[in-house]
Image 1: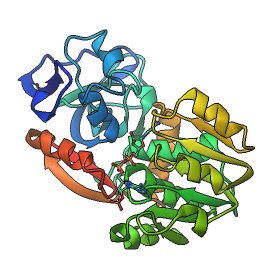
Image 2: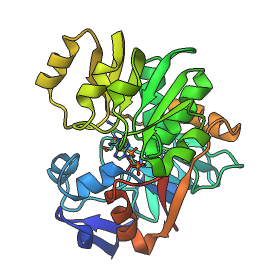
Image 3: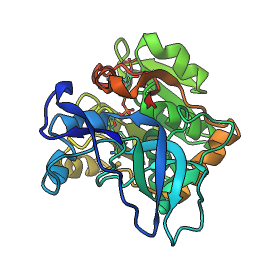
Image 4: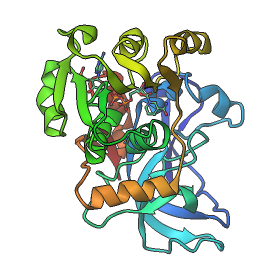
Amino acid sequence: MKAIILKEAGDVKNLEFTEWHMPLIQADEVLIRAKAISINPVDIKTRMGKSLYDELKSRNNAIILGWDVSGVVTEAGAAVTAFKKGDEVFGMINFPGHGKAYAEYVAAPASHLALKPSNISHEAAATLAALTAWQSLCTHAKVSRGQKILIHAAAGGVGHYAVQIAKYIGAYVIGTSSAYNKELVLSLGADEHIDYKTQRLEETVSEVDFVLDSIGEATIDSSVAVTKKGGTVIFLPSGINDEKLKKLNSQGVKCYRILVESNGDDMKKIAALLERGIIKSHVSAVFPFANMADAHLQIETGKTKGKIVVSF
Ligand SMILES: NC(=O)c1ccc[n+]([C@@H]2O[C@H](COP(=O)([O-])OP(=O)(O)OC[C@H]3O[C@@H](n4cnc5c(N)ncnc54)[C@H](OP(=O)(O)O)[C@@H]3O)[C@@H](O)[C@H]2O)c1
């Protein structure tokens, strides 16, 4: 099968197309013929030698990047009862371990998958970004109806799902983006838009119950400043250190980092929201597998709308 391997960290030239052995599945796994994979910032950071690179490289000569897959089951392990050959499935595989999704065939634990709704394309099947939004809002912050919440980068991968999920919960949603993406953010259901390039957060919003901060350095202090005492800020970037978090927590606002985790039960909830049209994936570009480098370069711009997909 065809796969893309990474032997050394570096730029997109290090994404090496090769013939690779077919993955062998364990009893609790299925083999998926990949139809589409989503590309996320963690793919790019890992390719560059950051994020999960050291951990994966310490155990593998060659890393196969990618965690976000949608495809068709071609084989099911002996212990798998939830899926059978021919089922269309999607999920975030083995995160934060070795996903190996940049390949024609992917071995995936059945417990990380959900059935793909038949009214959703493989390209629109949403995984890592939607799962991050879901786990941030529902598992960790437990956002509830009527709360005022702020979502940074509301036009991006995580943000565009977070706005829709928060509106579904019944929250009052404020989303940030540049003016260029204002219409998209409002069309997702946000009640208010803040242009981070021209408006100062502290002068525009206050007494927020919850902030989903996927930006980091530039927004850490303002995110906390606009949150009411007893409110919560979740930081998605890994850059913010424990000492800084401790300092922020002393201001009466709960501040913490989270890392999304593979979870088939959460995937089933996302599948149901997609099937009912409650959340929609904004797919801004689909690249052929051979053009993986272009997909990486698009994410590197930091200007991605919704999600970027590579299809087979
Ligand atoms: N901890 C975890 O488990 C986890 C999971 C997923 C993602 N993440 C991290 O979360 C971050 C976001 O991921 P993503 O997939 O949503 O990224 P993304 O799709 O690449 O984000 C792009 C978006 O960011 C917006 N943006 C850039 N600078 C901004 C600013 N200062 N204020 C507001 N919006 C801004 C852009 O809007 P404009 O073009 O309008 O500027 C663009 O729409 C990444 O660092 C990623 O690694 C962490």
